[in-house]
Length: 108
Length: 110
Image 1 (cartoon, rainbow over the protein chains, first blue to last red):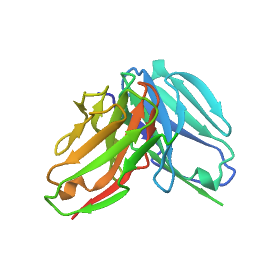
Image 2 (cartoon, helix red, strand yellow):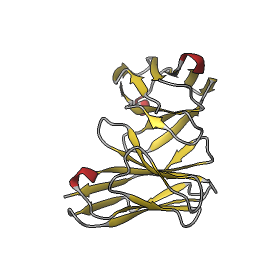
Image 3 (cartoon, rainbow over the protein chains, first blue to last red):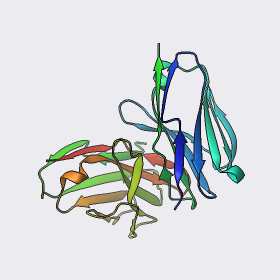
Image 4 (cartoon, chains in turn blue, cyan):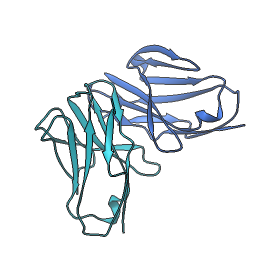
C-alpha cells in the first residue's frame, strides 16, 4: 500500500511566523487530504487536494501528484493553529493512509 | 445536521470484557470507516464499509468485528478486550472522496 511520510515531525513557531509542512507519498494518489487535530483531539478537515492548489484564509495547500508530494502553508500563525497536522493519501478514492503527523506549537 | 457522532465518548473495560462502539452519520454517505489512533502512530484503518450490508478489513483488523446493518450506522465490536486495544477510536464517513470524522471514543482496557 501507499506509504505517507510527513516532515518535520515537530515544529515550534512564534506567533506571526510562517511555516511549510511537507507530505511525501510513495505512489500515485486519487485522494489526498490535510487535517488539523486540535488539542481536544478533534479532527478538522482542512483541504481535499489530490492535485493543484487551494487556499482558505491563512492556509493554503499544493499537491504535485506527478512528483508525489503535497505542501501545507500556514501564514501569520496564531496560537490556535497549534496541534497536529495530518496528511492522508489514497490510491483509491475511498481509502486513506495517514502519515504520523507534524506537531505544531505556536507560542505567543 | 449532526455529521458523524460516536457513542460512548469514554469507556474503561477490564481484560476479557466485550463492548460495542456505535457510529452514526446523517449525511447519507455510502462509505464508513473505523480507525484507531495510538501515540506517534497516526491513524490506522481497522475496518471499513462501502455500503449497507458490506464490510472489509483494513490495516489492523485483528480482535475487532464490525457490522453495517443500516446505511447510517457502523458498529465496532470488541469480543474480548485486551490492553493492546487501549486507544482512541475514530469513525469517519465519506461519499468516496473527502472523509469526515467523528469526535472519537477514548477506550482504556485494564
